[in-house]
Image 1: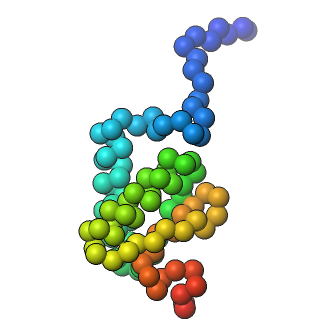
Image 2: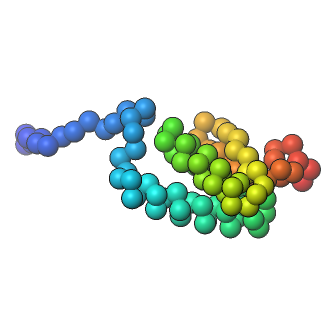
Length: 97
């Protein structure tokens, strides 16, 4: 059976802007701010997936917002090609366990 495909569109490349509207982007960053902030406050660090450049930018913006809110730097470091680690000083990869 032959199928005709209508209204097919290409998936955007990684370098294209986020498909989220401005309001959706703001809600996503606010949710990450509260959820990740709670975990960082409890244990000093959090690992979160970031598969695209836009997701990495979003997490860096959340870390900057947390730093401003707490008055203490929240650092961001890539753990591998698909995850970032947000942490407080003293809770980084070289910190004692």
